Length: 280
Ligand SMILES: NC(=O)c1ccc[n+]([C@@H]2O[C@H](COP(=O)([O-])OP(=O)(O)OC[C@H]3O[C@@H](n4cnc5c(N)ncnc54)[C@H](OP(=O)(O)O)[C@@H]3O)[C@@H](O)[C@H]2O)c1
Image (cartoon, rainbow, N blue to C red):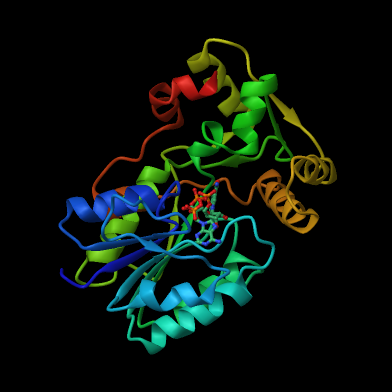
């Protein structure tokens, strides 16, 4: 494939392994972020909030991996002009990252889901469960583990199918390179659905020190997230997702990672064992 594939969020949890996965398949990849790697001749500076960066990112592109700006209460007004320009430029295939907790048409990522399906002839929207990387990287949950040996959520005993971002990326790579689109909407999970209490027990085992789950109300969680630096609106929308977990809506396991890639998705215990150093 000689036409470049544009990967937005190219330094992120899913974008980085999408870039490496595509390159290992021989694709030309245009890695787009605000701080492109100077050592990567195919990287491009791209900023969602600077539309003057869109044209260079889109030049000659027919396929895009789309990670909407994170941490923004309403990404749709920023993403729409970019997608409209992409469609006008002849982009056919867009593989977009959404969430298992957000259905098509719902606020935030659900609106982008609708745009992608409406604007492109070969849309695939990935709807993964919560990332395992939340336990190990620069996420509030990981910081809580490192700082106070606590996992604070508003999920009660609700379960969810934690997934390794590398498994999401493997699906994205297949969706980008497959001759025929692999599907319009794919709900992705890891191999099991766990409550945060069960996850905390696994974290404790792997870390070799007790880590407890602290269940708070949705309002308390939103308040904590706001105090941690998120905008009030974004904190409220994240906390509201926990309520869905508490209600049992996210208690699901799909076989999609294996169906699309042929690989067995990583379990939380396997993931944490590899990233054990990040729990300290
Ligand atoms: N975490 C979860 O459990 C979970 C679950 C389901 C869905 N999701 C969704 O997954 C998406 C990604 O979340 P994440 O936490 O994994 O983030 P991420 O992809 O690890 O990081 C965000 C990426 O976007 C880039 N970026 C940020 N601001 C940008 C801007 N203004 N212009 C251009 N690029 C920008 C960053 O690169 P630079 O900083 O280098 O520009 C980085 O590569 C979010 O939409 C989230 O809602 C997350």
